[in-house]
Image (tube, rainbow, N blue to C red; front, side, top):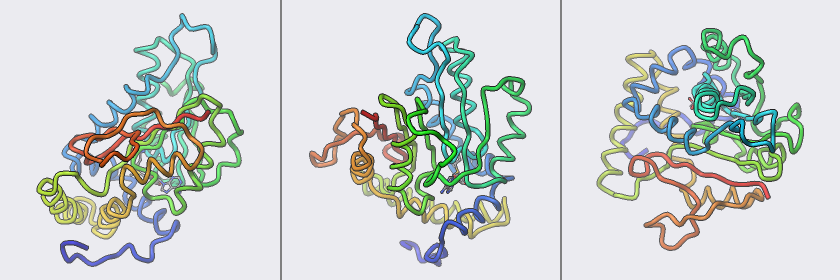
Length: 273
Ligand code: SAM
């Protein structure tokens, strides 16, 4: 790595990813706050607001609400926001979310959380243990909105997961991804950021969760994730139309993403034609 830390992720495969999240599950929400200085909450709020989940009662096109699939949904951070937004902003009490994750321990944390949420007694939330690369229990053309936040960089075969996203979405359905980016466009900020992520995050993992290696892996998985432009290309290759905007500073490459906090994270969207 850039700062001389041992590379622990070289031989990681899906099984190792599972182990990492099993080991971080119980501390996951606290660690997110510590590692991102709380900023992940703002990104997630913005991400969900930008998708405007739910259908207002005045819209007659889909009286049953939306069917949302939150992939790598972990402890339910995004799903809870989808339901809050559809309920309070769109007065939609029907939209439902399937929280899907490969890791049963992460899902168990999500279940605990929903047990004390307003959505517990309703059928608006369900949990599915599955690999995002293969979703046999989800029908083709059945989902209105597919979200994945801070998940796809962990997938072994990202293009395969994108193909599954494309399959399960209805025509007109939206794919939306919130993910860290490997590099900030400003070199000075990038250097500071790399010091923070490679220096502080594994250390916080060691001190708070007694698990340095898992947090080292999480940092390295960000480093290996494609650039915003490359990832937009992968989404296009899966068959999605990309709502056009060209991101400044990308040398005229066709864009289709939105940088957050100077490009530490980015939102990518695609529409199934
Ligand atoms: N979306 C949540 C959030 O934003 O807080 C959780 C993100 S967490 C960093 C990444 C999640 O991806 C973990 O819960 C992990 O189990 C899940 N994951 C990793 N590989 C996966 C795969 N192949 N299929 C589905 N989920 C996966």
